[in-house]
Length: 190
Figure 1: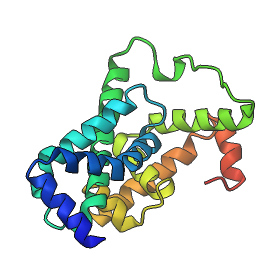
Figure 2: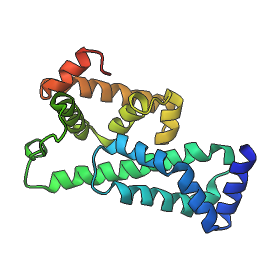
Figure 3: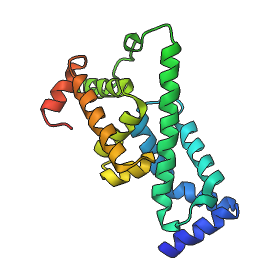
Figure 4: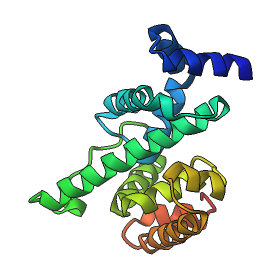
C-alpha cells in the first residue's frame, strides 16, 4: 500500500492526469465530508472540493513524505474551509441584514427536532471566529487528536488548545440563543 501511495505521488509530481483522477477517486469523498463538517450546508461545496484539489495539484511538489498524503490533503481542505469562513464573515460584515436575522429555510425532513438542533448548531458555528470553529470541528466532529488538529490548522499544539478551549466556551455560551442546542448539549450530544 505504501508503495502504491509513493508511486501515486511520484506520478502526481510529473503531472499525470491519470494520477490526478486516482487521487480524486481516493480522497474526493473524504475532502467533501471534511468541508461539509467544517462549513455546513454551502451552495459552493463542490467548487470548494475542486479548489482543494487544484491547490493539492499545484503544490504537490512540496510533499516530502508520500505516506503523509492523506493528512496533507486534509490540511489543505482545512485551509480552503478557513478561507471560505473568512469570506463569509466579511460578507456578513458588509451585509445590510444582521447575521442573526437572516431567514432560514424550513426543515424538510419529518424529524423536525433533529433538524432544528442541526440548524441551530450550524447557526451557532457560524457565529464563531473561523479558526475557533475549525478547531472545534476538527476535534469534536472529525475526532482528530490535539496534535492532528494542530497540524491540520498549521498552528502549534498550544495555540490549537487555546483555540479549542475558546471555541468550546463560545459554543456553550450560545445555548441561551439556541434552545435546541442547549437541550442537545445537556443530553450529552457533544
